[in-house]
Length: 102
Image 1 (spheres, rainbow, N blue to C red):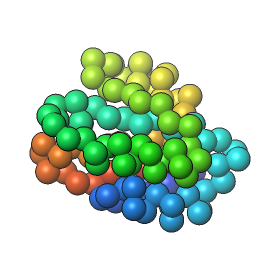
Image 2 (image 1 turned 180 degrees about the vertical axis):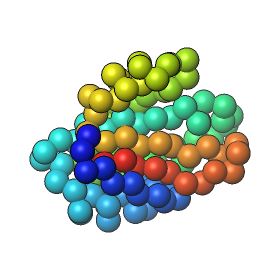
Image 3 (image 1 turned 90 degrees about the vertical axis):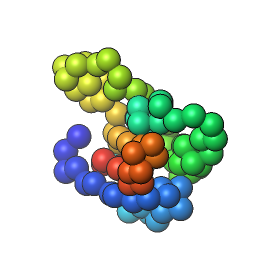
């Protein structure tokens, strides 16, 4: 990935359509949906599904991915195959910011 951009947002599902307007998904739309932070969450994960569904609706090909148990080399190799990386928020620690790397 070259010319990376970082978008910080809460409630990503609300702003994804606005962000995508500035992207050319015809050049690549593969997105890694890093959901590691949600692995410790119990109960309703509607917020996670809302973000995933918004990304799909916006035109991304979404693949769930966890960084649990992976070393740096594995992460670099695995994530290098994606055009975009989305980090899901960690609600357990009250981090409500999602990250989209493009």
